[in-house]
Image (cartoon, rainbow, N blue to C red; front, side, top):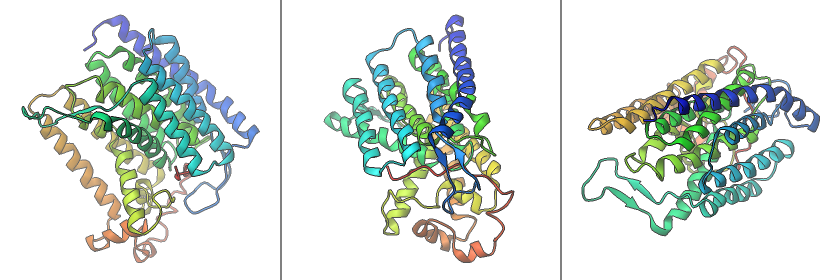
Length: 389
């Protein structure tokens, strides 16, 4: 573990600086969004706010992160330079999408380009996975040439996974902040200076924006923020978990990003099972289930924070534990998995489970029995981002 007090102070300063910059930049970005017409106008039943709200707030998160990183990170290797370059591409895409609602295919192509920058220019790849069970015969699995498509798929998938959960005020930003904080702790534990600075800056930038994004939100971070956060978490997990720390099981990044991964996987299964395109937006995400079960928006966000915190703690313990690591891993997955399945079922009997899977929502008969649940406390919902890409 990094014990140098000067470095720890630099990490703390990077976090604090990013937080202050993000906090101060948010009102300016809000004004800019209003000037250029980057507004989220409620137009379907997936949105619960009743008046236009500025989006593009992710630009403030990006500015706080970037300026803090450039000031406190003394040396950027080729991999980290490629991550920053790719993140700029993602943010530019997000700004245009928040303003003009770009098409799904165009967004996917640009995301693939950003991922390719990291893979080919930065030479960051998921080239092997550590065996979580520590077999002496197979201590790791080598992907060979398949590492290129696997890494690109990972980056694009996590980028969109965070975008998918950006459906309630403060949800995606808070979940990303918790994941970043846990990744920061792991980086400190394994003495990775560069990743520590980046994660401190990312955590601070999220903390600076969250006060404006809590219910009732004054500004949404939009695709600018959600795709940027997803891209950063995906790429830094390659730099800091898959690539550098051979002692860390591959399960660690999956635990850190457990909630977004769970939500995007279930969304794809749900849509394919009902004969729809996996890119077609619906009202069946994890946070929708919580609202349909009668929780208020703040309660739903708090539940998501707790589940992310449990998985993140398991990831940290898994990094430093010895013989107990498999037990910790399985225990965390079972606990969170059981809670997630219960939420997906919406408290309904098991017989109605596949109705949820196929139709992306609760059984209409169950919904009719709770006509006031969705309107409880009149929660104001973060915009559903464009999920097509």
